[in-house]
Image (cartoon, rainbow, N blue to C red; front, side, top):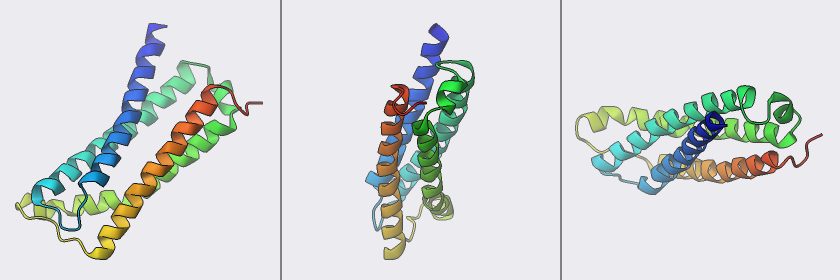
Length: 151
């Protein structure tokens, strides 16, 4: 029982970390960010990766070894939708993460990154979409946990 609670805590903490880091990137992103802002975005993006990996690993352990068991999750359409939406968030995050990594050359020299209006608009849109889809993931998780739609 205690181990289930520990793994639930780890899973929820990582989920909150994903929300926080994506929101942090969205909040810090500027058309002309300072070097300090760009570095903060890069840190948020690294933590996003850590949190996303943690969600996957801990979530898989919860599905297989803890909670309601694999059969419960496999029978839930909302579990499948949650996984698809989580994958979509991951795909949406590729472009921003690549851009933030590329900023490393400039921020490593103490310079702010140069961002075109088109790049800024694309980054803002993708981060916004990530946040919206993450709310869909949370809704699916709640519906799944309550057995809605399970056969």
